[in-house]
Image (cartoon, rainbow, N blue to C red; front, side):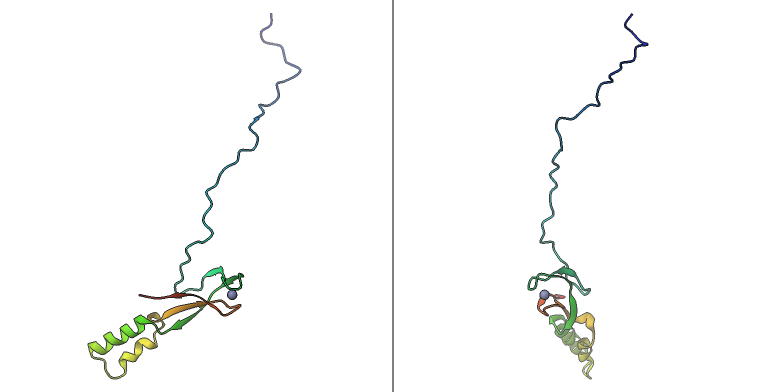
Amino acid sequence: MEKGGYSNPNPPPPPYSSVGQTTVVVAQQPLVAVQLFREAPVRTRCQYCSSEILTSTAYETGTVTWLACAITAFVGCWLGCCLIPFCIDGCKDVVHSCPNCHQVIARYNRM
Ligand SMILES: [Zn+2]
């Protein structure tokens, strides 16, 4: 008698989760991300004026420049060829500075 053909006028409410909002603990990346200061300008936060900036890069004579000079001289290019490394940006250190406050933020040493 009580099976089938009988529609319940009050359907059961959808299952309600009493747990509520599940707090998902996301492992946050540390804010101090390892910035790779190489030849290209880097988007970072200036530690001096604390503004979001894109570093302006400049090439500076570094250890590798002198090393390349020494090697060129050693190989036998005495006639000014050892000065070539000083003209090649690829042999120089890259200095990243802040375009806002012009402080040097990082230096990319090729060594
Ligand atoms: Zn700055």
